[in-house]
Length: 345
Ligand code: 1HN
Image (cartoon, rainbow, N blue to C red; front, side, top):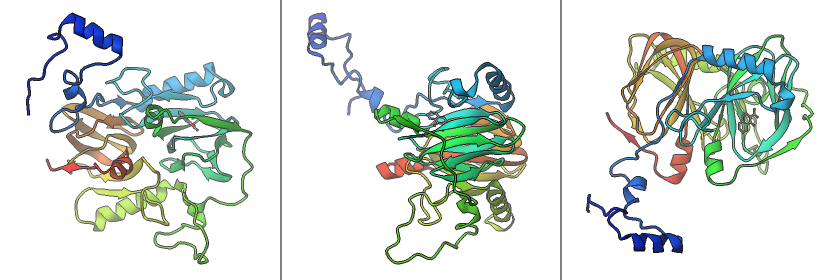
């Protein structure tokens, strides 16, 4: 195995011109770019988007651009490694911060990428996904699976802000990303499935033998349940940092095809250093304050901030007060592709 591969420059100019004319290029000068040794060489750099500045900019967008002219009034959080305007925070994860003002609606559409929202501020916002009205309360995780119709509304009297996470970069890369539009959906007049079919862990509705179960039976994970679970795990668990996975209550598997979500509770003075993972991630701070070091880059975060992490990063979290983070990752995709990996520190 050679570490000294030939370069383009050492090839005669006439040969290089002939290759260009034939529409080909030699692999060997480019080989290590796409197959570095030992581990990937990510373009993604750690990013940090403090909420205070996003909020100010979003509220201004609310004055400058009516929702009718935006469809979705969103500021995109661009990966610093790719530069402002990049429609991705990591290789596979797009995130944006969205504002909806009282009385506004965002029209119904459906698209091939899947989305999830983490609610950041405000009351009275809701999403309708395939006819199911999903209230949006602080910290809730609300899913919009690919192919499902969704529109947003707002019955409160103050701005509502949430973080959107989508597997958009993947769909764009695959040239598989597109949308369809429709009028606002009729809403079924009943509470969402977190309050009916899936009120408690381990209990699901009994089915007839031939009945088909919805592919995405639960689309809202109320924060109050998540926080209560984390607190009990922290009290009675194995003593490490409490972290929970959001799962499909019918199958126990990932909630969406490519993106996964966890919530973690960090206790002050208890550092958390997960193994290096082959997944990239976006963290959102639901509550608290602390510091995360990612490959030597120090991120001092507080409530409602968002930060990102490349693949195989060395990550060290340390909270200075009791803190709750939601982690968006792409392990479901990597598991399906057969290469998810963790490396001990
Ligand atoms: C989308 O559908 C939403 O429904 C938000 O709120 C952000 C970014 C790219 C593509 C689709 C939404 C989006 C998006």
